[in-house]
Every structure is written in structure tokens, then in C-alpha cells.
Amino acid sequence: MKKLLLMLVAFVATMSASAQAFITGDDMKVENGWAATFTPVADDDEINAADVAQAADGSVYVASTFTKSFTFAGKALPDPEGMTSSAIVKYDKEGKELWAAPMVGNIAVSAMTVDEDGTLYAAGSFTDEVEYTGADGVKGTIKSEDVLSAFIAKVSKDGKFEAVKTFLATPDADLLATGLYYPEDLYVSPTTIKLNGSKLYVAANYNANVDDLGWKAAYLDVFGVMYMENRSKGIFSLSKSDLSGATSVLTVQSTERISYEQVYPEALNFDFDADGNVVYAFIGFGNLTLATPDASKGFTFETTNDDSGIKDHALVIGTIKDGISAKEFTGNKNAGEAIPYSIAGFYVQDGTIYMAGTTYGSDWFDVSISHEKDYAFVAAIKASDFTPKWNRTASLPEDDVKATAIAISDDNIYFTTNKDAYRIDLATGDMLADGDDSDDDFDMSTGDIASISAWKSDYAAIVTIDGTDLTVMSIDLNAEPASDIPAIAPSAADAPAYNLAGQPVGPDYKGIVIKNGKKVLLK
Image 1 (cartoon, rainbow, N blue to C red):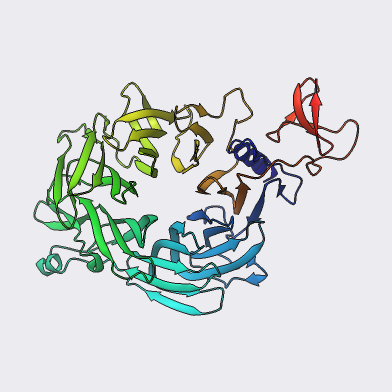
Image 2: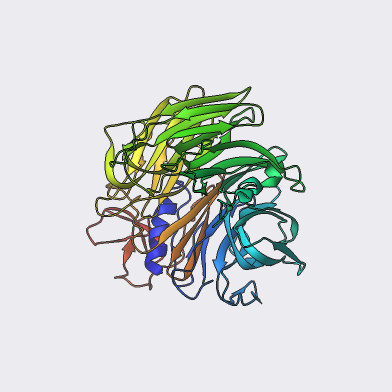
């Protein structure tokens, strides 16, 4: 774990010239920030959902699945009794444990966001019956049938559940009446949650009807013998004050019942332009329809009916404003089934769309880029006409790379994959990455970054998974560097020296180092 934290220090040090962090020992103290670890599971494959959200005051919310009782803020969470439950925990700006709000049952939080007053909004999925308990001890229950349904929770900065709304996945009654439809593995599952004015917006995957939203599922007609669910994606809004007024914003799905193959969107994400309009991007193949309450637009992307299985996995970027605008990026053609296409991050800032995700084969913005394994990309695109400004990729020849998150400050994008972290200049796309000759190198060989969050240019937080441990690190991006740094080695004439990224250096190193707990210039 110490090695993992030292590597995290190297990443956080890139986030601001004045916000460097240094591990000072096993207690994981960090200059201009902090790091903490808790262990919510018994086995290393049981943390199947983890997320982090940073508040304006520097406090940090973390959501994680848990499979055993553990103690947080002096209180033991209830034993989940074999169920994969979830908990939301909160640290203050100094890293002190404040409270935990457990949700016991089969439930996972998949997305979180924080309002300026510290109110947390969390979205996720659950089955059967779940009991949630706020930090004030007040309990509540949500129920679903034996299907994966969605929930949205509004949690005060003090850990009280102020409102919880569920969206149930239901089978199609008309198809049930045919006797040719046998519903299986139905779901509606949120993926992204964002605030815009007085409303909360949520993107979700679904393959069933969602009656509260008026969403109808897409289905596959298997040669007239039976009907099977097909995958769809959508965005809906609701009031952030009490989670009422749920309204569909858009859906993307196949509206044709075809018999020979599934056709579906593979990824969807969104943000808002300066006027508050929804800006969206999705990846998909085949004949798809994007629909809003007022309009619809069809897309046709090439698929083959021969044994090759080649499909055009197209990227579409557009805006919902007085109708539907869209620009199509095609040319990513491959036969891969279950390739994890994703749009892990999508933000609009100062007239530019910044997006990151996972792809395979040829790049949408530069066809000269192609890999035969999954790889991650980051791109900057003009919001006015969806013209690419720059594009960067991250890949390892020996391993698949998947994008996990991006956070944006005034000047940089902080981009994480399941293997590495990168700092990218917003204007130029210049990327500092593992293997560069700089102190910004970062190697995640011993742990996976699960999520990254930032509050504008004030704070940033990271959560990583390393076996059964979940580690949280937070940094104050505006803090001035201390003149003296707490000792990271015994005071001795031959004490080891560390560069400003917290990495050990040899006796021939030239420049400023940390030695005996102080900055020293080696000439």
C-alpha cells in the first residue's frame, strides 16, 4: 500500500505547481492534502463499485460496496449478511472521518455529484429490498422485484437521506400477452449524474420499460419465435429539491424489431453548454433512433450480415436545442463483440467539449491511430461545430487499457485509466504520461484508479482499489507549499533524498530534494 500511495503522490504533484504532496510514513500524512484507507470487503474481488465526489469546502464523499461490517467515524456498519451492500462515507477537508450512511441489501452506487451547499446526489441500482440508514439514524426502505432497478438519493451534508426516488424496470405487458416473451435479467442502471440549475440529470442503461419516464424498451424478434430484450440508453431530469417531476430528456435505441442481430447504443454521456442546453455523445451501431419529447432523429451505421460480423461503431456528438443537432464520426470498423466502448468523461467548458473513453481499432478523430486491444482516448472538440481540436491516446502493448475518469481545472485535464494517470494541457493537448522524462511519471501497477473528482480548481480527490483496501486521497490545489516538510526519513547525515514528486534519488542527483524533512539544493 505504501508503494501505491507514493505513486499517487507523484500524480497529485502534477495537479498544481504549488500543491505538492508527500507521504510522511505509515500514517499517510500528505502535505497540502491527506490520504486515508478503509477495508470494506473480505475478498479482493468484492469492491465492484467505488466512486468519489469532492465538495466546495474540500470535504470528500466516497461510495463503496461492502460485504462485511467495518467501523467508520467510530461506528460499526451493520453486517450485510452475505449481500453486496453499499455505504456512503464522508471525510472533512482535513481527512477526518465524519459519518457513514449504509444501504443494506443488494445495491451499488454508480455515480455521485455535489451541489455548492454540500448536498450529495447519488445514483445506482438495486434489487429486492434495501434498508438505508442516514447518519442521524433514520431508516428507510426501497423495494424492487427480482430485477435491477434504479434509485436516486439526496443526502444532506450531515448525512441525512432527504429524498430517495426509485425507477423500476418492468416487462412489456403487450409482449407478455403474446406468450412469446420470457423476461430475463431486466434492468435500469444509472451511469452518470449531473446538476444543471434547479434540475438533476441522470443518464442510464435500460432494457425494460421504465413507466415513470415513459421509456419503452427495444426488443429483438427472433424469427417470430420469441422476443428478447435489447439494450437502450437514455437521459432524464428531475427536481433537485425533492426528486420529483421526472422527465425524459432523450433516449437512444433500436426501434426496429429485427431477427438476425442485436442493434444498440454502446455508450452515452452528456454535459451542458453555457446556455444550459444538453450536449450529448453516444457510440453505437446499426439503425438507431435518438428521441426527445419533441423530436426524433434516425441514424444508419453499417453492419454486415456475413460471417465477418464487421460493424461500424460510430460516435455521435450533438446538442438538444430547438431540435436535435448531431455530427457523426465513423470509420471505427471491427468485428469485436463485447468490446468495452465507453465515454468515461464528458465536459463542456469555455466552448470546448472534453471527452475521454475506451475504444478499439481505428480512432474516430484520427484513422491513422489504431490498436488491436482496448485503448483509452482523450479529445477536445469545438462545441460550436463539433470539430476536433486535438486527440490523445493511452495504450500499453502488453495489456488492455480502459479509461476511468477525467477531471478538469482551469488549465489541465487529469485523466485516469485502469493503468496510469496523465496531465493534459487543455489548450495544446500536450500530455505528461508514464515514460516521459519528468517527475510526472505515474505507474499504477499495484492498484486501480476507480474514480477521480475535482471541485473546479480548488480541490481534487482520487479513490483507488488495491486488493481489499479502498484508498482516498485529497489535495488542496491552491495551498502554498510549506517551507519545511515533515520528516520522511530518520534525521541523519546519510538520510535518503527524495525529489519533489516523493521519489528516492541517488547521490548524483542535482536539484531541489527533500532530505531530513527539509528542502535542500544539491549542486
